[in-house]
Every structure is written in structure tokens, then in C-alpha cells.
Length: 565
Image (cartoon, rainbow, N blue to C red; front, side, top):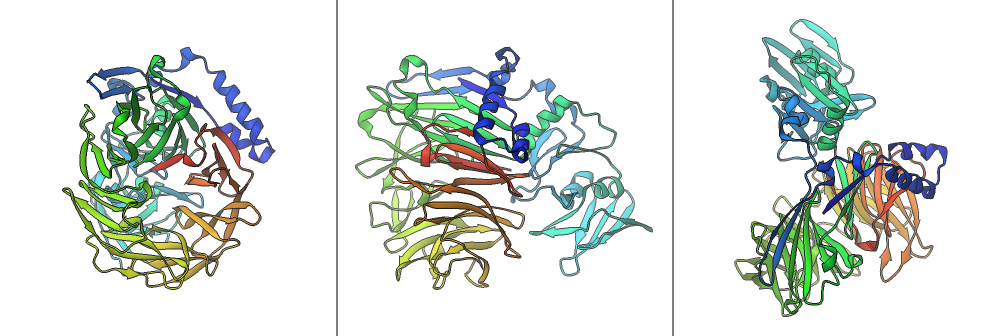
């Protein structure tokens, strides 16, 4: 059963400047949720088609919860001849069909800067049948559309359409290889289309559009970026406009449940959450896979199989067994058949899976990196190497040497191993916009370098030792620092070009069978969301008091999150 309670937090978040306490805001949210009569919640959101396939010792149950409108009432069907976009979202509707602005880069999206909305020009040109050329050396842009020729240049505000000169609301920009022009100038002046722009939703069409409030709300829900936080059997959807949805998932009929308190989200691959029931029943262990809308598959197996859920990839589930087997359950196999694919010990934060090939740090083989393909296991690195991430067919991994953590990379076959980090002590690193950003705790510095280790430069000085890098939006990076002597930790944002820093939140650094840290930081719209202990919090990007939006009971250090753009 999929249950959804919609809690509108925008008003509550607006109380930040008024000094409303986090506790008071949480209470207000609960009161608001309680005031929504059950009869007023649409059946599609209450959702509950249950299809059960029975087997002998293993069963797959699918619990569905449709969240859209009927096929003849979908908002996109009413705008079948329009182009529909959303600020900060890589998704779009074109002729009523959902698509991506750039199928290879989810970072390509309309954005607002200094009050002006800018849109990716080539995408719009392609949709309206225009031709566009861009000279990367000079920054010159030429567009031919409807018998007109338009010209402008990156960094300039003048747009020439045939012999007509137009002063745009903002200069054109090139961001990570994508050309942007101001929204209204591109749509109305250049392409001669009608524009509807409200609450971040952009509708481009041949005729004026009268968008109803219901259709606008549905478009926002389907297109707006969101961060999804999960822990135990609960999810929160955090939208870029400050709206929050709470989602509860019931996994089994109550007669089969020993304790829902022991369910915990173990992993997400960006498409699904993978859940382990740590208590199960007298005879069986239970595991679950749920998509981002709460549609659930249940798997249960005899406890004697001793399956330990590690991770998932594109709906496939991967387990360890005490005897060293790595076990896979395929996405399309509703019977839950288990397949031994090799030997080793997977660790969820140190593995990469693509096309049934696994690269992983083996926890049972001195933490060396191995490649597992068709049952054959090939050693790629020496001991004590931990995969951090894989990018453009390079494996980036951490290695402890000379009393510090270093960052290396190698090819997917183990070739061309190279140390990238010099004499830095790298506590954490991430790749954004084809650059590596890393926390150097030896020099107490946030640094940047090219993917091959060249071009190193200091970005900003750290107040305390750096802990973790989480997110980057535009030119702003979000990370944490902590002081274990003072038992404090803080969330920061930094402009990677200027090095200007701002502290957004401070929490006590706590230890309860492991460190309780600020985690799962996601920047969306005007807000930055994060988890601490079992709480989900929001803070304005420009500062202010953090507000607790809700709880993920018993999640503790184990809440997981994704950002869907």
C-alpha cells in the first residue's frame, strides 16, 4: 500500500525570517497535514493496485501507486503542441512526450540569474526547426529561423534580427559547452512564439495559453527538480520551490509483519531505493525495491540462504553470502531467482556496475580492486585501494600512503595508474564540470584540479578539517567541515571562482555507535536540504536558521538521498 500525505512547507519556510522555531514549524506542519481530510486526497495518490505472484520459497509482490492523471486528463495532453520546460530541470515536454533537454548531460537546464531567466538555445532551435551555429573561438551565435537571420555574441546584450537591433535583458552565456539566451528574447523576439512563464514553468507555443492552476501544479510536480530522502519505510520529496511531500510505504499485510521498525533503506542507484528488513519473519528474510514513486516489489527468501543486501543497479539486486558468493537477482525476474555471479565481498560505496561487469574493492581480499566479468575475477590494483567514483572510463580511487590519503586514477583494465593529488591529504573529492574538487586536510584547503591531476589551484581556506563534498550548482559548491575536539560540524557553501565562503548550518558532532554527521546535502532552488541524525532539514541558500521539516525514524546515519533533475 502506498500512502502519500502532501504537506505544503513553503509557508512554513517563509517563517524563517519571523523566527519561528524548528519545533514550532514541525508542529505546524503536522497540524496542516492532519487538516487534510482523507476524502479530499485523490485516489490516484492514495493509490493501491496490488499484484501478487506466488512461488514456493520466494515471492515477488508489486504494490503500485499511480500518481498522474488519467490518460485523457494529463496536463501534457492539453499542451500537445507546446514545448514545456521548468527552471533548473533537465526534463521537458515536447508534443506531449516527456524528454530530456540533453540526453547526455542532466546539467543542461533553464536557470535564473540576477532576475533573468535563460534557456538552452540549441534545444529550442531544434524544436522549432531553426538552424543554429556557434563559433567557440569568437563566441558568435547565428540563428536562421522563419526567413530571418539573427546574430549575437556570448557576453553581449545586443541581438540583431535582420536589420533590427534588440537589447536583451541579459547577455548570452556559454555554460559548460551549452549556449544560453534570455528566455523572453529567445522565444518572442527570435522564434516569434507565445510565452507563458509562471512559478518556474515555461510554456512555448504558437498561440496564447491559459494554464489552469491544476495543470500548472501538475506540470510543476512532473518537471520540477526534487531531492528524495529515504530511511526506514518513509520518503520525503523536496521540491525546488520549497514544497515537501511525505510518502509512507507499507510493505506487507499486517499479519506478516513482525516489526516495521527494523526496515531500513540500504542503497539508491538514482532509479530505485533498496530496502532490507532486519527482522523478517520466523522463516524468511525480506528485501524490497521501490521506485521513486513508491511502487514496491517485495522479495522473501528462507533465512538459511543468509543473503546480505549490499546494493542495486538499474533494478538488479546484489547480495553477499558468508561463503563468499556474490549473488544477483535480475530486474526482470519476478520469481526472485538467485544467481551466483562470482566470488568476493562487495561494499556499497566502493563498487561500480555497468553491463553486468562489476569493478569493486574486495573486502575479503585485502581491499584490492577487482574486475568481475562472466564469473572471472581479475585483480587491478594493490591492496588498500578504495574506489571513489568512475568517470569517462577512468576509475578514481583512494590509497593510504605516507600517513595520508591520496587520490589515484587508472583505466578500466587497471592500466595507466597515476597519482593525482601530489602531497595532499585527500579526505574527500568529487567531480563537477570536468574538474576534481578535493578537501586537502594537510594544507586545510579546498582545491581544484583537472581530471588528469594537472592545473591544481587553491579554491578556499578551510576553517576546520574538511569532511565531505556533496553538491555543486552553478559555481557554488557545498561541503562540510568538522572539529572533533570541539564536537562541532558545519555546512558551508563556497564560490569556486572567488573563494568566498558562507556558513549555512552548525550542528553538534555526535557519536552513537558511529558518527552522526550532516549528510545528504542537496541544493535546489532557494534551499539547501540535508539530514542530521533522523531529521530532514532545510536552510535558505542565502542564510538563516535551519528548519527541521520532518523525521526519518531510526534512519540515523543510514538515510539515503538522490537529486532528480
